[in-house]
Length: 366
Image (cartoon, rainbow, N blue to C red; front, top):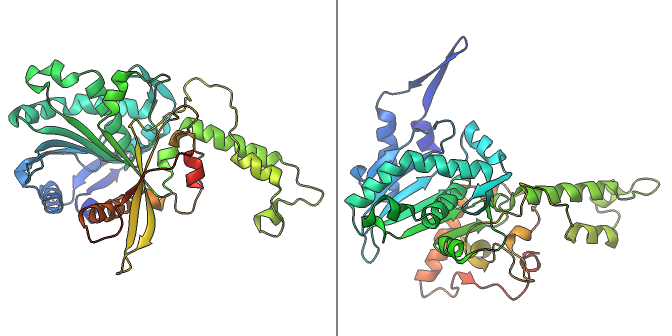
């Protein structure tokens, strides 16, 4: 927040004309670079590009940086993509019906965002990779940025774009880290090619974050459920307020209605989109350490159904008082740091991760 305030531009309106005026000419970008470098452990010269916080219409905010090799870790060219921050971002989120993408269907707004972003960063990313032979390409983002990062990674790998651009880049490893990604992709019978493209996408969900379940299909199911509950017979005196207040028990028939899987009529463009990854890491608060700090573990979940086993895209949109706060960036960072600490610190009892039992995810979720 402080960084965004420091880097903000002053918008001055004169009649119907809006003029953008930097608060302190030239210092805004320098301040952002300095704080970013300090936080990430980078040198200023390793930041190739950093877009203005206000962004551009139809282009998601992003920055490109060089992450130099550290110990056993290889170097990487990093493309980091910001989540929703502008009205253009809201417009992109809202365009959630699907369109053709990589021989499947993808969230229309985010697919366009991924295509537009590649056109914008193509030359800079290619030049950075050629100037740093042996470096990986890491694409990462949060929320809208995570969905864009995942689809851009799919596009780069599925269409073999780097090799087609330059033969020297054919062996570049592409990885994606998607935090709080919305469901953005669907292919009815996933081919081996698309599975391979998804293999290096690592997706994370934090607690009751609502965004990873916000697809057109999920919202249709939620709307259908609300109509059914609203139409449920209320009795002579109307029992809905009494049930809501806990004075009258909820009938078993109504409870079953809430948890059943509705058979919705097929709607073109409202496919059951999923997070495009081989698995999703669902981070949950399980305990507190001896200093009272929250400890998290992560459960590996299926993004899509496999046979009779359901995926996270089958779960209903979860209405919860923390559904928005659990989506925020600092919450993800806190959970990730907790899991990392448990995995690296052998003295701690927890491994920081668990594998799901052989049940459907909603059973574990409930």
